[in-house]
Image 1 (cartoon, helix red, strand yellow):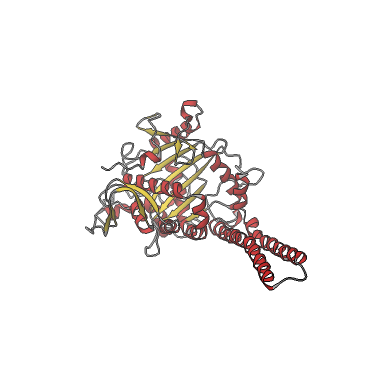
Image 2: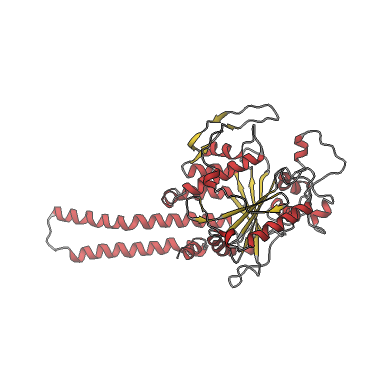
Length: 439
């Protein structure tokens, strides 16, 4: 039943037809209530009883009208969200489209679907977007078993697929032989985080796409990991701030002071601090700094805080809270998500999401313990990626022992891949990783 309801919630035609259908039902109910009252009311009735009867009819009409109006507004907000975030397949212009998907063949014969998850720093008061978070989710279409592969934002010498337009434009990948960087800002322009913005700017019109920056990243990450990327999902920080405010804030454990802003390169101090403590309630701007600040810390600590912020949203987004604030949440989400997933694949991803809840999830992070970001060994990266995907497909009982996560009964075992061998390390759930342990 839940699966069917989720499918309906992503069907624009159903969402479009729901408000007029509810209006017709409401009018029928009102006519029934009024007609029943008129037929049962005695011909001779005193004024107090007449007033009381009218008030009763009004109360019954309101009792029917309020929930139907509420559902109609939710349907309208959901329709706007789905329509703005997802286009029909023939409306999407992209050079990285996967094989066509049909209702009869939703997976298009694929054993796995690869989704590029991006975190962007675009805001209304900033020019361009840097992708500070780059992660590939490789999901088995049969079991939901998933391999999460994270690449650092400062990865250099990123290649493009051989014989592609971008390989011809960048024969050495994102690298300029012989160049000596004058400062870190100049070096930044040759890192993975700059591809989304720089490739379309340096070669306008080269990629025939609605979002050439996302296409460039799909091709670059695919070449770096040795995997074809089917779709991308970009989460923008400006929308993240609005989403947290729409939820009424989030509550996280803060183990050490977190700076609000600040720039170490220019010597600009933070505007303030989030003090340590358990169950700290953060509004949108504070949650944004909690999730993205790097002042006095590094990218990997920030990645941990980002996971805890997302965990807090998932844990605290109860059905009652979502329903009460859904219009604001839907409005914020329109600024949060960009994707090239067509509407036709949404039912497939609903089914996949339900499978992933009890799936085997492996986690591979290419941090400084595995690679040197300025001179990475891409053959090693591709080999470790294949190893992580193969590990996620194993069905050994020991590897699929359920662990309760996120307080929602989600059965997930995370297998960390590190060094030159793959093994199952003691698993730490997000509840444990985000617990209050002051340093």
